[in-house]
Image (tube, rainbow, N blue to C red; front, side, top):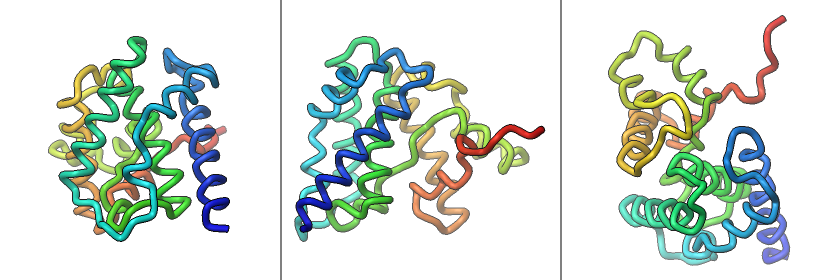
Length: 181
């Protein structure tokens, strides 16, 4: 039963990554996205084990996974590659409960316009936070991994200030809000 549940969660996580890239991404097709997801070594994080993951190990894994996607698919910039990885992990780890001990504390929210908009509203009077979280304003402008790391550091500052998990900074995402009339 556990294997079936994990399979269902991982299938759904793949679909959420596909859905998240339908708007704006240079790579949109099911074949492309699912093919890219297959080359990411998610098993190192998601297979059941009692060995906790450390923050530095996750950071290294994330960097390698994102850079690997960009190498495999030249149309992807760092921002879009990170979004694929982060949406998949958000669904499988935070929502689905999969992964090694400590993983939920290491993952971070997918970077996108909806999160930037929510953070800008919430922290409009906090230039030090916005200087990190809004170092660029579009996913396609995250062209190198240090820029991605700066944005994540800003998310980490928000999480520490709020006393929440890093992934829970996603509470400010406005993607599901309907426009005001």
